[in-house]
Length: 445
Ligand code: UD1
Ligand code: CA
Image (cartoon, rainbow, N blue to C red; front, side, top):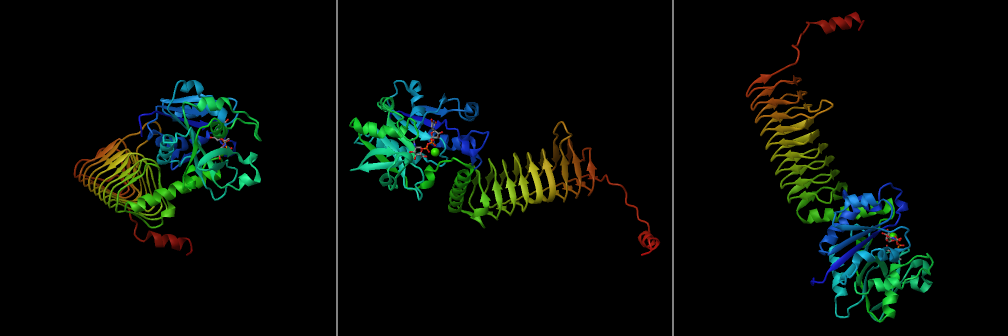
């Protein structure tokens, strides 16, 4: 890309009424990440000199979500997409680079597509306006792109379109690149004499053409890339597309999935090759899985690392800062939070391990719990290398179990256990010979 600068304007002042949400539309997540963050990451790839988001209500929410290098411009009242760009005028005073205008509710737009629009804007014909078009299966109420002899002549909004124009299946994605020399001049010429009584950004095409400029279309073959989110059904649809793309990506990179459609990823999930994932596994944010790992069915994983050749699940839950060492076995109904589990340790059944450091090769029996919380503060448990914790033991933190130590089943450990010691805290067993038979006889059985 040439040295010429790019400014990006994201339009997000619409009310988003159809989401029926107290949260701004652009903050709803796809793949565990707000729509606006998806978009901003792609925008960053253009290395823009200026980034502006136009908001209406819920300004603070958007402000909090985006970096301080983004200008937030308030548009109240909202008089249309053309008006929304016009309110950015003072922020782009003297800017003569290219201005890329993006509707804020397209989570799946790719920077490659934006770049090809900019390249077209800078091509030999020097088009003043470049519009991203697409050919949807259902043209719905999209604006239609009217072309003639290789030039884009006008964008006609569905509401204002004749039957003939509605036959056109080339639609406006709402993403438009404009030569900064002319943008605000074009906007000054807008009027709201149309079916919606709004100032349409889309009208700049016919304004530019009337002034003798060239206008061009760039087409994306992927309808999903420009899909807009207006309601929860579309949010769910976008999620589905996002997940399918992720599944494809991982399958191609050497991950085995028994039933890809039942595995859900976060935008930042990292998985090495030769990992096997069974059905019904959910990856929340910040998960990293190293090579050779097997994840069995029904696991919920978030913020954790699973190191080489470990096995997790079925029915395991890893929470933030769980670090599962090489070759570890984390079995069914085991929850691990903020704990380092060293290489080769086994926690096979029904455990909660939180705020702990578990040494190499430790074996933790069924039903072992770290009691890490007293209702006010969290405390740490450490278990030394090679220790064995008997089933149904409660480790009341803060507490340390030395390496090689054995804790008898059913113990409540409140004091440190020394290296290679045995600790048992349960009551001594008492047996009364024949008592049960005697008892049944007394009951008449
Ligand atoms: C717009 C386009 C249409 C295109 C479609 C693609 C216009 C006039 N029409 O229609 O050609 O096919 O997008 O999805 O541009 N917004 C503001 N301020 C306003 C009005 C809108 O910031 O005053 C923002 C909205 O938050 C939204 C975007 O602009 O992110 C598009 O607005 P919307 O009302 O959804 O336009 P459409 O009718 O869908
Ligand atoms: Ca829309």
